[in-house]
Image (tube, rainbow, N blue to C red; front, side, top):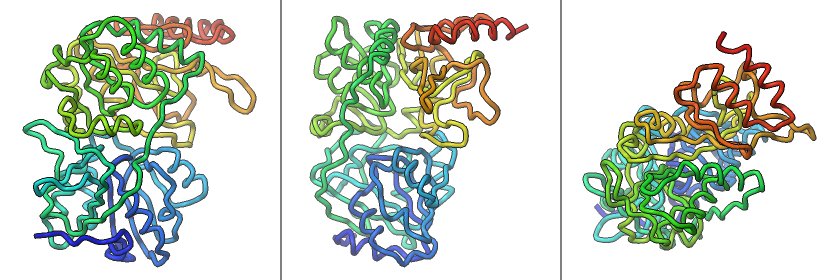
Length: 431
């Protein structure tokens, strides 16, 4: 069957005032289609599932629209602060596929690169949506909307996996021409430069890397590209501009990985326009489903795995808070837990939790390392999975340490103004 080619407005008209709709994370979101949906004001009960909006969409400000979100970004935080109907569905990225299947929305949508030989590349996002996209396309009672954009790269997968959608399954093909969202490099602070320097101590030739959003992971990848050494592998939930630079410098061989030796693997990409051009038809990078990329047992097959993640705070037990402050949702679980857990599976693997030692709140400088998490704190990483913690003051490898030893090691990573208090608290733990 040949899909109906239409404008974003015509596609938006196919969604009922009472309906259910879903899309994938970030770079999988069809921008023009969502904007067209926001032009309507006749919604009665539109339930939308998704994650990590890359822009502020009017749709989610409309009465009658509710948004069930698996991962917050700046747009979700703004929408919620404005009082719109945005709710978090707590879930790791690896759980997105079964959660989406349970939700089973009538309308599924995604963005893709233009068709080649009857196939559409899902481009910058594989994630956990492809199976449900296919299911919607095969079901006559559901609607599959795909937005094609010539500015999106045609990305590759690797057998037995496939990041394409057959054109014949698409109900509505929306033609768009907008420039894909670009995430520019973040300039690191002096403290973040020190954190990156300490993190580099754990990266050795032949290591396999996972990096995410932020100045520290970006600086680690860029520094590795510029200095001596190499023979690295890449196994990363998110593919970044820094990882591209590592490839361009000839430092990536993927020779020491487990299941995916010979090529880098990821499930979505977010970065600069240069990154998107570089990914086009690039067979060095394979986009795979998130349930494979984020499987701790698969990650654990990689030699010298080094995972670099951020955090908002932690206590002396090593309990990490990474996505929620008090009652305020900042981000989400994502793949944080999966890569942290994978580091437990072999001695040459390290999961780095990186954070500045202090934060300023209302003009007051506070320690991010506290004796105990306050009541109601949401733990992202339990203490038994916390492997290495890095601040601008150094690093602490916690594996094999007692409760008291861990506490004192973490106290040493705090700002000097808070260390005496933290060491005193450490003396009371594990007794």
